[in-house]
Image 1: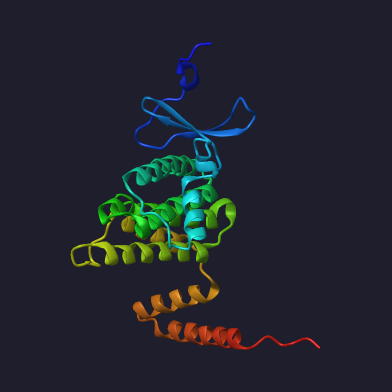
Image 2: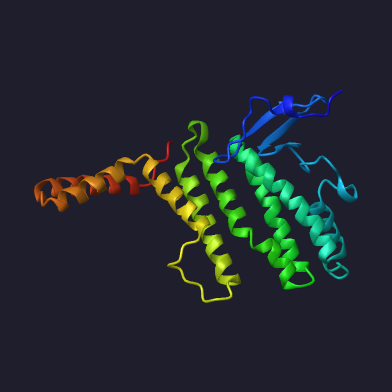
Length: 260
């Protein structure tokens, strides 16, 4: 049997402008994820470790250290040295490639799971790395991971006609708040709220888009019409709209009548 992968990627050209991924059925009958790269492809398991291994007998290296941390209650937990961090970094890279592929495949639940996994790795290393330089090797990627986590959560709330725009907006707003809190905590220079990072810009643009796409309620529409009438000095119409708005607010504030 030839080991050449040319027949596998034939017709699947690499596009540097976008992430290309696909689902395939493996020879074992299970579902796999393939991610197209310039020199070939990655093939990953959809669950657990992307490479399908069980390090130290655990589903992931993170699971191994979290179990050790929990059972030792912090008393005898070893500092994470370069070798330990290298193992965690290898795992984080695998999860990174998988959540990129899953996002391209619109599998948002998987993206949320895998970005959370990598953020937990960063938090573990921050708690136990033998020095700050090792910890920063992981923490520097937190804003990107948090951005992808928020994007996936927002997309999941509005995907396939769900239309849960309020929840999507909250997910993005929380992501932005977490990224800004991260930089306030870790930036060596004085944090400048007027300077927007790439991750903040992505989420800010998404937030604007969601707010524009969110269907307006009758209350919101009345308020918008009222503001427009005032802006063009149509005070007679403004008075009518204001009265309608007050009636609506009064009706909404009344408690529901209990049925006997």
